[in-house]
Length: 402
Image (cartoon, helix red, strand yellow):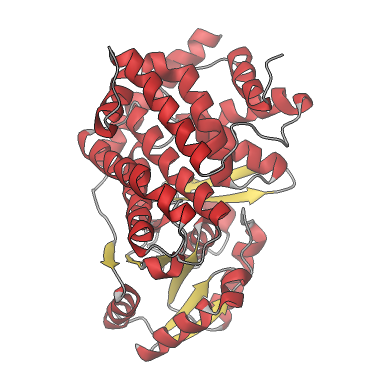
């Protein structure tokens, strides 16, 4: 049965590669720098937006950023309304609350302001308001029939790259399952990358979100759906992350480092939205569902472990990554080892652990089963794992091998 499943998965990945090759290379209209936010709102007004729902979280309300963004929206002759109920791992309750406010205020545009959770919620709200208002029916691939309302994004973390992707994730806490929405129609139309919004990010969030971006880029280059263009975007992200993440972590108000990380997350988003991801994300999603582990941290912990297990099947792209980073090795296999070492060294610099303290031995079988089910649906993993191999992999994240 294992070999039948592996064979069928291979067929799915070949079809996925064909589909991704046919997908238009549309990217958001993107504004960069200190004037980016104002330019974004001017462009929104010019396209006819008048009543804008800001989808964000209470933390950004407390920092004062939501007030400042609202004032900038008003300066562009539009009217802002705020839904600030988004929490990490947004649920359908958050989507429904945002939709209700959108309808109540007769909004015609949505601005996602925040990290990946706000972006995910905003994407699904935007799609559902124009497609029957039952968000659950839009779960899956290419389920959004009618274009969403105008959707724009201002990221305040440098990690998820959601501002550049065609995907969103909504959680069901009762079942520990995450629901995926994948459709080019939920790609934001316009994006503002303003690193000044990221200057006050705490070091721990800077580290976790930065490793999230690195995971997107690395899983993109080793994916069986990787192409020349996606690899160029991913390598641009990797270069920027290794250059700027340690500085952004240590000196949060370094604008050059923050700008570099904002671009890195964006490039990584452009790459992985076309290639998809792999076992790292599948495991991280499951850690999030079981233990509410922040997504970036879960990705960071899983990344070197998954690469160790998979490296024999992806030595060529890892060797190219080594060349980009100036890492030496006698052959591609040794270069792959140097890459994994470099990732672990980076994690050490920014105080990211290699193991998940919350992980329980009793959960490993179920976590593995759920992660493999997610990955084997359509993730272009370089090496196909069975349940026993998967459990062995997850067990390494305990910090001990049973």
